[in-house]
Image (tube, rainbow, N blue to C red):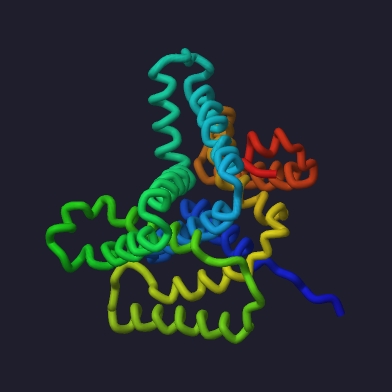
Length: 287
């Protein structure tokens, strides 16, 4: 009997990413704290991408963010029906698109630069301390009046800490299966405590051991996989395909969203099958 090799970290990333994209389809009767859910989803995706970036050459990291510019240009030209000049307004529109439609991946790019500079100036150990303090500040927002005035930046502290800590995880070794079970039990127990005792601090501490185990098990030799290509496709291709679909089809938001999701999936599969170096670098950032 063949052993089933599943990249659980990649699969979880894809599922969580799809959940975040499908939230407009959730029935109004489903009571979900969107901020809480998105923090978990974004944190895991940031950790997953950060881990991979930490093993890339610096020039390849730059290529990974190249689609940000390409897709933003496509979106700007689509919404303005091609009536765009190459001037400062174009740059302003591109930055607006990146901020609104590519906020997650643009944050990751900023975190990479900040972590890179901090590590060069202060060294790895001190940067790790900064990351720990950043997460600690996130949890202290509700208890220290001084930092409450910066509440709009609260999630950034969490995400930066997660990014740096994920980048420090060493290459994977074999993980004992019972550790996954233990981490899931901790996560379920914390969810039950949160639900029954109304203990809420905006995040789940059990997220950290579970994420550590999942990322630790990643096989870097298989980075170019269908799952990873689909993840990059839904991050980069989906927003531009959604805008193009809206421009071509006048109708309800939900059918347009479903069409864009299906198109992204189909194109992602084709990109994986073709493995065209320049096309992949331009559209999804890696090959």
